[in-house]
Structures are given as C-alpha cells and as structure tokens.
Image (cartoon, rainbow, N blue to C red; front, side, top):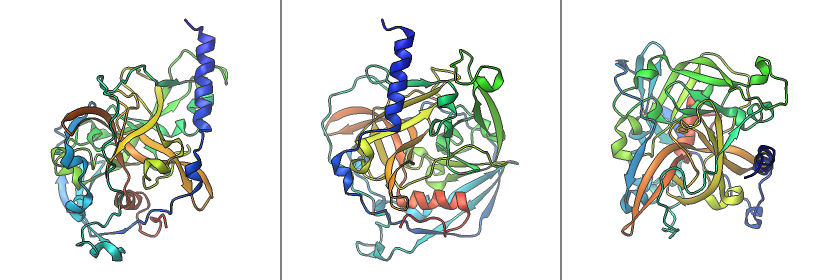
Length: 382
C-alpha cells in the first residue's frame, strides 16, 4: 500500500497534468467557430406563483434507443422548446416565447435544421461496462487545500442548496441541471428559497495557508434572485430525455470569484486530448469537491456520453474542455455541457450504460447567453 505522502504526490501530479494536457497533432488545424443563431424574445406572460410541490431527484436516470440517439433537432419544434420560464424569489413565474432569426440557411432543407449541429457519430463498439456511475477503479480526486480549492478552474464549482452542483458562468450567474430545481411538472420544494454555496477553505478559518487541513471547507450561501428553465424541460423530461436538462440561476449580488466562459460544444475530435472534465459535490463524499476527467465515448446532437466516474450530487456540474479561442488565439477551458446523470443506451440490440452531459448547441448557447446578458449583441461566436 502506498504511503499518504506518495498518494498526495500522485494526486498533485495528475492535477498538474489537468492544467497542461497533451495536444494531438490533429488539433493543429483549428475548426471554424460555430455560427450562433439569434434568439428574439417576446414580452413575458405572467403565469402566477409556483406551488413548489415536487421532490428533488439527484439520481437522474433515463433510457434511450437508436431513434432517440440519432434524433436531430430538426424534428423538434425548437421555438416552442426554447421558450423559457422565469421563477422569481417570491415564487412568481413568467413565460417568455422566442423566435429564431439570422440564419438564412435554415430553409435549405425544409426549414428545420436551424442549429447546424454535428450529426450523431456512428455507434462505436466498446468493451461492455457492467457497473453504473463508477466504472472500474474510482478515478475521482478530492480537491483539498487553498492551492486547489481557490485555484481556477476548481474555484468555479459551487453547491446548489437542493443537493446538486453548479458552475459560475458570469459575475452573477450559475449554470446547473434543470432537474435540480424542477421535475418537469413543478419546481422542487427546495427551490422556494434557492441558494448557491461558495466553498471557504479551512485556512481562511485558522489553518495556515498552503497546508492541507483535515477540516472540511465551510460554505457561504447566497440567495438566488431569479431562475430560468427552458420549456423543453418543463414540457416533461419523459418527452425529451436529457436534451434540455439545464437551468440558469441569477444571484442576488455579484461574486468576486473567477468564472468560466461558455462555448458551443465542438465535436470531441476538436477537444484537446478528446477529454472532458468536471468538478462536483458527489453525495458519497460529503463536504468535498470532487474532480474527474475522461475521454468522450459517444456523442449525439444533444448529448455527450462518457464514463467519467460520478455519483448523485454531481448533477449540474459544468462539463468543460480545452477549446480553441479564435480571439485569444490559444486553447481555453470553456463550459461545453452540463452533467445530467445516467442513461441506458440501447443500440443494435446492445444495452450500454453511460454518464451523460447535455451539450451546449448553438441555439442553447444563444438562449443561455441571452439569459446572462439580457441582450442579443453579446451572444455570438462568429
């Protein structure tokens, strides 16, 4: 058995590799930025107050077959599903419908494919995985000590008071999973006084800086002023699976921590190392921030399939990768998805199990960006 010092050294080396991942030669040719359509919102319609009757479901599991795996967004009534509901702190709700414009090519194939998403990859035969959520040896790392807890990108992970995780995407906004606040029919009971928790390392509470303390971090809670959920989820998660499992929370006041920028999710071949990463608050490690990374196994138009080890509580974590930033002319960590949960995928008569993230498509990017900025001018990747 390795000594604690050796284990700590190995963990630190792996975390350093996280900061400096190897880049494949194929990534030297950078893909063009995704075209982002423009969402035009209409005036909000009052809906009354929520009853907050639902129970939070942290272990979210769905099933999918070949038809839903290969389903593109051209078959969806996108303008209807991209409408969104806004929940205010007093329980009052509004519904905002939208239109999509600024895409002259949308009528070339019948007017449906406005999102220019990559087609689902052909099914890849992989060794069968038998376990759920933890695949083989547990590859998760507990993040401890000021050097990591307050270090970007780990500092962008926050707790959600309903038991989930979120990621800071602006000075005042947190992206998380929709099922953490809404069950598809109503808001969960805990969303009545929804809060976001910021970790405070032990050193700020008396431990010498730079040392790893056995004490668990404290949490500073901040109330949420406004919550936005796409109507594609509110219509019922059974209809669309995980495709619209995301929500944006607006804090009562800005925070001072670094946040992570959003990006349209590229093909996995255009991610540095073909890897994704996310940090969350897994329920089997209470009070700890847990980091993991793994390669993308499969991808569809709306979902990223992977075997990153995760447990309930990690739902809502910001899934990020290193993508090429044309403005900065360098590789940048950006949020490309939201960790949703677990899915059994049946393809060609085979049942496979995956952990799944909702990918940020161009239209979803435009929607979330509008939620953050409140205008359309700042929402482009061109």
